[in-house]
Image (cartoon, rainbow, N blue to C red; front, side, top):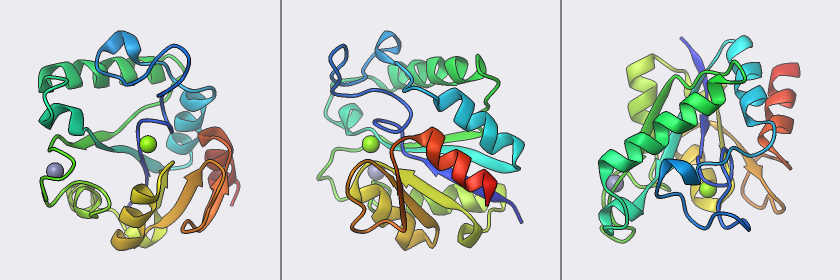
Length: 172
Ligand SMILES: [Mg+2]
Ligand SMILES: [Zn+2]
């Protein structure tokens, strides 16, 4: 079976609520955080699948069309490839935040779908996010969990950046 690192998108891969971008609704608002391309490459080279698992309620709320979201993701993949990193798959929940869908994090459904599709052992895998819902989704799916940010109440581990997390994972 394979092992994987599931990445939340906003706040882990790219800037949000920074001084130059609020939310990412267009490709030109996609700014990778420092070290992200290198981090993905480290994980690729260590034999992890790298997946993006993201709640995109802005689609359901009408702030962004699904085609535009796909363009944003093309830009993200392209920017990461500039550093030699490869995103193996992307899954998103396009539903409104309170629609009660089965896929929106903290539900583990999106992780389960990717795990099934790519034959991933969740116990040997990691979910990395910057919010509690990411950590809860990882816990419910049975992955190890890493929070990027300050408090790690729920998460198993905590780092300041994706690069630091990836470096630690690949040195284990
Ligand atoms: Mg986030
Ligand atoms: Zn959903």
